[in-house]
Image (tube, rainbow, N blue to C red):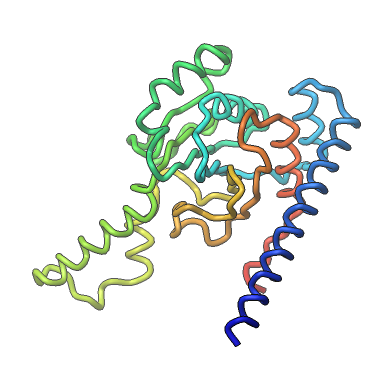
Length: 248
């Protein structure tokens, strides 16, 4: 019986690897077709995508760095593309907090590479006071650097806080509702992500904002070094064809 289960697991793993190989090959072929149909200019590629996508672009895009090294230059490129496509919220998530620790380097690199776009960015707007009446500046792109502290870490901290309040008699357990938890965990001034792009070869959320990604579409980047504008546009095109059914 054990041998049979082992063979079954090996077969499932083989079929999954075969599926991934075929999927990546189809993805590469699709990218080649896009490349043949458009010019090599980044702007032309993005305009071509915008024409295909029409109004179906994410309002909040998250880039998930999994087990790979975080690329500051890739972040700079992606921010520039999001500004061109008028995507108002872009977040970069790595659970170890590498980008948070190197925010100064990222901002300096962006100022050096894209000085024309510096005035279009609000950095880490969710950690700052909101604008008048809680309204953020919609004319600028909001760039956030997130880590495990903003995901599972925040849930753990909230659980400990509620448990302490209940044990001290300052909170009735019946007062702990979905609405209260959502209110406490909500990142103010930031909508839930519409699309998450995962760097690496493992399909995992890596702890990304588990309370906020119930309806997020997850797609894989086949390459995670020097991501090209065609890779980026192709994934956004795939997202544009997705239909949210919300469990129906």
